Length: 234
Image (tube, rainbow, N blue to C red):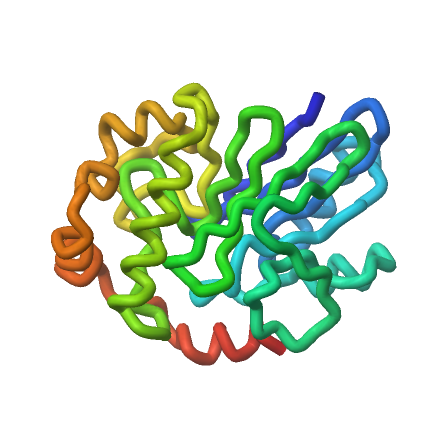
């Protein structure tokens, strides 16, 4: 059985994860960030120093500098696990939709869910969805940080339809929580059924209306977002 450590990084509202197969003592680090490496190190210590099998990014982040290449190097891995659609220039392990990553006895399924970015993956393991910036608690990830907004809106719309097909009891663990990201809920996880009932973005069933939703009234873009993306692609 997999154990999920959810690490909320200070007062940023950003979240990193460690997935652990308790029986085989293997783990994966997901969406680690520069400046918060010690949070990961402390959690690995608390978990008894399991073997790090994978270091994973759900997507190319625009609000935090990734520490994934650091952890991949520290643990002697072949690279960072990313979507095959990434433009990342470092050492990487490419994935496509439906791929399975084995972490001990646990199987981590790759769900390609573009929209927030062109290279976005969600990851499904034992009824738990690591939803990255695709699906939040009560909202979804923005589409205005580079690329074609209409194209990305359509991608996100279709990705949400894919997630809606998951069992309702599937737990949703997002990459951002709380008011710092203009997310109303202070919960740290949800379920697919709760989001289908309460998430306004999932109530929009017309692509034109969804484009209006995705382009109207969003908060200011993160500071230096273009520089952060460029850094994270190196």
